[in-house]
Amino acid sequence: MAVVEDELSLVFSALADPTRRAIVERLALGEATVNQLAEPFAMTQQAISKHLKVLERARLITRTRTAQARPCVLDTENLDAAVGWIERHRQIWADRHDRLSEHLAALQAGRAKNEDKP
Image 1 (tube, rainbow, N blue to C red):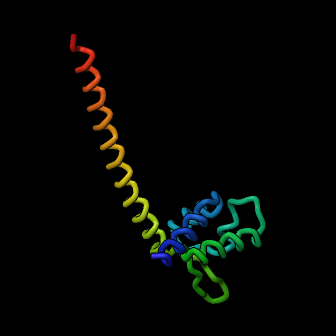
Image 2: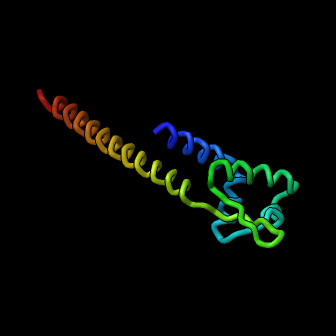
Image 3: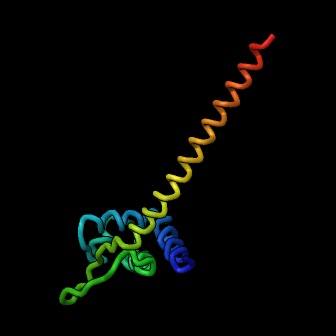
């Protein structure tokens, strides 16, 4: 379980940056080179490369080799694992919220019942 948690930490850390999220969104449309990924940003190719290294370390992207180019490709396995973790916990939190709502409704009903007594 600790290895999975470490991978999730890398994924969430990588996705915490808006530039990296934008890169992931772009790669969801298809592979792209570093130059193509750098185009919409006001930053150097080296800065984009650093962001790509973080995404690679989190195993969210891979780089392939096509002749001289090394296009980046989205790797959804760890992304899917993060989505699964979020969904499991979302369900736990939703269940807790539902139980809290039921408990508060019961408390309010008890108060209203006690206030109606002479």
